[in-house]
Image (cartoon, rainbow, N blue to C red; front, side, top):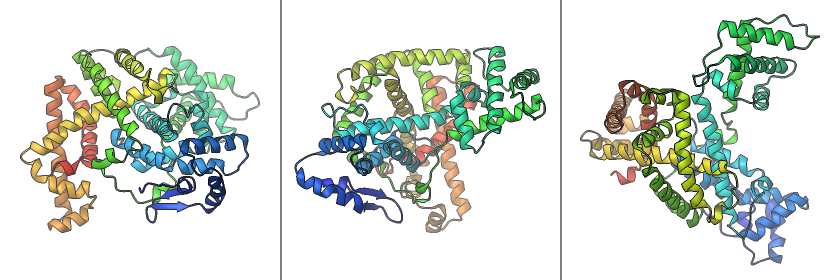
Length: 477
């Protein structure tokens, strides 16, 4: 992405990725801002963001919101790029992250609600808020994946379920039927469920009780027949399905756009501000010191929780010989200690003075723990293995061409004069060696039980795939 330099460019252009990557000028915005700049030729971004925010709030200029959205294009781009590099989720592409960022920036009045121009520059403030919004969406998807269907229903609010069902195209009177079935599930299932255990499917007896609840409280004039336990099960399964779909971000115009090549080796050179780099470095140092003070089992639990997407707390509990709810409590306890260190660090940090809720600090902590567990520990081991393993280090040129330069399997097979199936077998062999080395290291370092190694097998395979896609191949040559 080329950097914009003039005020006119910053507040009147939008970035497009198809058919070519370039800045496109909105002529209405350009005509609107040009005379205003002539009146204030020396003013900076703080002035113009404040100017357009006031115009948007007072509705004195119908193009005010568009001007701020144009200004935030670079911020959205780099927020998505940096967040994706530090927190990769296999269910999302980096373009998905960018789409999330643009959605967050679509309401600049809300985004800048607590912005104080005396404390930080607008781009840096917006980057913190937008990065947090991206992580919220990704984390919501990840948490949903870890829940069973029944746990997802149990944790959902009525409002969230209603929204999910409406997005699935369900309207009245069917909508009320689903909500009543869910309400019966909440009343009956919650009362009979053994706390601390994983949420399993309702028993036939529970479904029959929920059906009785449903039939008792349905609309008196309803002409639908009495509902049975199997009818209730179908309604509840539809509810859980709608909730899962609602956690996935819908990609529209960006979905058909070609992927923008990202040079992960030079990403640090292109951050929005040096101030953002400095914060990440400070955050890393503060929390690395804090995590080093935790007992070995605490560090092990945190790495299993944050390092392996797809590994749930029930599986982690078996490794420690405790219940799932005890894992949840212990993780909260460990994070509380780290959170205190983060809160102390942020107390006098200008860019975070707008953060008053502990939840905001907690989000930052979870982001760092994911990055620390995956990138600093697990990816680092895989990178070292790739560099030193006698078989794997010979395949670095191949991996660089396929993953680093994004050469298709077919094109690469032609270059190497191999059959495509042969190349796929070679790539599968590389993945298998990396996964075996990672599991062996995990067993040796954390003394994992055989059952835990089996549980980690699938998440570790996903982690290896993610590493190969994002490995710093320029440093491995």
